[in-house]
Every structure is written in structure tokens, then in C-alpha cells.
Image: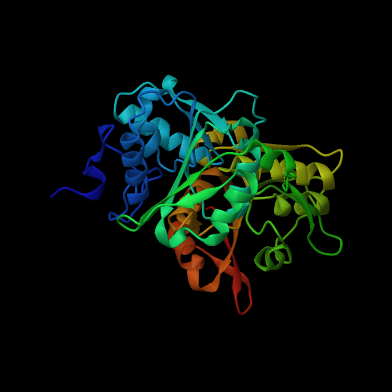
Length: 384
């Protein structure tokens, strides 16, 4: 029987085999959505033969990039994993990745103009705001701008951001529960806008000042789960190698370095904005100290570069855009186990209902819940 992952992705621009990356245990999930297909159908119906300088924004698994590969697009994203997924799906379909120009969300953009802007609207409206502000100077009144998402995620606030930072905006009717957004760029609007991100946010008395770029978790205020975790980090006073895994704005690793000057601290995340936030947070609060900052899809792939750790701190996400699940957390736990030295510990915070301690016990063979309140718990597992 054919599985969802084996079903070809068929669009007016060709038929392709696409995989999600990382792979998921939920076989019902595909590497594309009805919003991707709606957007591609629209582009085909425009009758345009050459999209010129084509930019694709937030292409989660590469469906748009693969379909539009002949136009040699730019792929603009805050996700290293999304860029990796696009590369893998290019290879799966024997396409040359040299046809794509990969652009990190934190990169300062040149002045070359965009002829066609194709966007998947992200869940995080702060990220959308930041992207529109960054891309604004590259848009002209002749730029074709089309964005897409599932209809239930198209809000008045979404439309308002396009109108505030780009120009007049309207939306399509829903089709297979997806909707499109069309925008006419007005350079005069962008010229009046003021950049919103990053922001400096206080954590707690005596704690680090956090530098938050638009796509980090809890970017507007200090997260109560992180506060609970900080009270239970188990900070040592001797020399040790510590990793802030899925670091976000880097507040955990930065606080640890502030409390233990002998610690060698590293930060790892798949978000370009997270690593930039962590770097700026660390530099602002741990002046004169050194740390390593690495972006990637899998920690275990960078083992030789980072070495083994005495302690790994992890506040894992359980949201991936509009999807909810623990696949990402479990992958992080497996990577952490491979990256710890013998006797090293993984220290994890999570909502109680996620029951991370059960997964940690199965993976490590041991776990201790060192702290718990009504909402969160901190669990520690040792590598035997």
C-alpha cells in the first residue's frame, strides 16, 4: 500500500517526490499542503513565462522551491532545517541545488530588486513583520507578491501587517481550506516604517538582559518555564563543558556562564535568528567571555566540532509552525545522549502533560525529576 510520503507532489510545474525532514512518525503528514498547491496553481494561471528574480519565503519542506526550480529562485528562511529539507528534496528529484540561492533570515540584503515574491505565511506574526520590514526595500510597485496559508490561519492581523509595511492587500476565496493573499507594493509605505526587531527584554532581577530577534520563543517577555528552569539548573563551580541545546535567545547558557565563569558554554539551534539572539545576549551579559555558537539540523552531526559535554540544558519546543508534537523534542534527546560524555547529564524542562521524564527514562535507562510545580517539571538523566 502506498504511504503518504510516497504519493507524488503534482503541480502545474511538474510531478515530484517529496519527503519531510526530519522524518515524522505521523505517516499522515505530507511535505506540502493545499496552500502550496493553491499558490502554484495561481502562478501558473498568471501565464507568466519568466518570474525574473523570484524569492520564496518560508518554504518549510521545499515544495515550492522544487516545483519552481527552473526559475533559479532565492530561498529565504529563518530555518536551517527548511533549507536542508529543500536541498534533500532537490537531490531526491535529481535537481541541482546550484539552481537555488539560500538566504539566511539574519543576512543583510543587497539592493537588488525582487520581481516575484512568493511567501508561506508563518504562524509567528513577529517573524512576518520582521520579514516584511527586511524585504520592503527590495520590492517595487511592479513586484508580483503572492502569499499563502491555510484559511483558518489567515487573520485580520496578517492582512494588517502587509498593508502596514508593504501596500494595499486583498485575499482570495478559500480553496480546499487554503487562501491566498495579494499585495501591491508601495515604496512610500516602506520608507515611513521603522524597524521593530531585535528588542532588549529584561529577564529577572540579577539575570541577563535578553536580546530577542523576531522568531525566538517568548520574544516579548521572559518565559515562566525558563524562569523555573533557571532556578533548577544545577550550576557547578568547577570547569565543565555546557551546551544550551535549542538555545533560543541563549538566556540559559548565558546565565550559566555568569554563575560559573569556569564553564565552557556552547549554543546550538536550527534558527538563524535564535543563534544571532544568543550571540548578542551572551555578548551583552557575559562580557570578555568566550562561547561557541552553531546552527544546524542535528547536533549529532557536529559532534567532532563540538566535542562531548558534561551537561546539556534543553527547553525543547513542542510546536513546529502550526503543528504540535514531541518528535522534535525526542530527536533532541537522542542527539543529546550521543553528545554527552560518560557520566554527563541532560537536564530538561517541560510542561507536565508532555511527560518528558518517561521518554528520558526509556532512552537513558534512568531519570530523576529534580523539581516540579503545577505546570512544569525539570528532569535529569545521566549517560551511563
